[in-house]
Length: 523
Image (cartoon, rainbow, N blue to C red; front, top):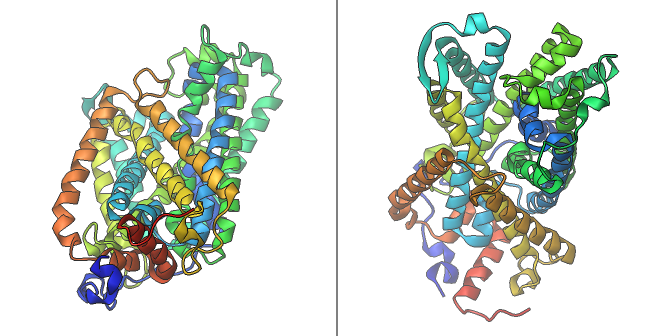
């Protein structure tokens, strides 16, 4: 048996100067209300893509394939979400999937999960900022397309759009630094405005005498089978619904029982699906969808809507996309900073990331770090940025997999789960089946993204970017490995899990003891 198991107090606590709080990280204040958490999940899941990409999706799957694909994709996300609900209720700490990977599989896996989560979240912050500039470029091209700088991957880069993106990144970083409650309120009302705008667009388009559902015919693209069309859309589900997984990142800040988290996640996924479908239907009934999809327009949805209801349609779209982008920026700033907070607590990255702002009690170091990295992105142009963002789906899918595997491991009838000192009473056949199904779904999503020839396969540029991120992660991990060896597993548990550490650590201890042969596996 290791020394850490025989006598955990044998090892000293981390240096108090690492955290400025007696050697233990300061915990986040419980300020998030249920409606704000719902808004974080919904606003993060529905961003610029819902309002800019419907014609692209119609070209891939047609009306039938897109609507069926989003329905199936949402159903698969709900299965994965069940594991999130189980684990948020049991382990309500900042860091979400990183904490779950730590509990079930140890520090190396936790670093791996946190590294890829950071990749996914930071990329989406950057892309949302560029989407805001794209909106202004569409509405005021004569103003934005001034001050030409250069062309990257076929995309002309102009100074005004860089200024817009940078301004958005700075504003939302400052907003989040000034307090979780403030950003939560803004997130909620932005979501309300977005829902109202989408409902108004759909009602106005369908009610117009110039539109009819015959424009949705044919149901599929020419020469594409129903199964191929649906699978192609299902493959984008991890990207389209990224955002509900932001909820566990903020679980430490709930001012309500974590038991409610699953209901909030389910409601957010269902609402997001409804918004996606509303925009797809509005676009495809406005005019014959095939002509629209093949027109080569930079923003076919705007062309379709404005063609039916004129300038008011563009106004409503502008409101919807501004709110969608703003909630995405805000929500992923929250999530990325909380992952960095948890990694700082575990000393996987410098402990400064675990410190909270002395006045506002927010993870300001992580928020500044996300902002600084994202401030580089507008200079590369949107086309090149999409190469990096496309592979962010891999990062989030890896997080889905770790969450479901952690739930499966905890809820199976192993020795430690039945032990009265560990997670007694947590085993459930239903939970085990659902978490196992979620893990399988996550693997399928990953294969759809990585297997060549798959309908959702990543392009060469995205795979190169993914490989580069893996290499950087390995180098960073190795650079910290000597420092990390100064801490025992139990000390890392204590730093990350805080008040829930005793329960989680008993599970963690027994898992290690079983691996070391301290007692046999028995079912």
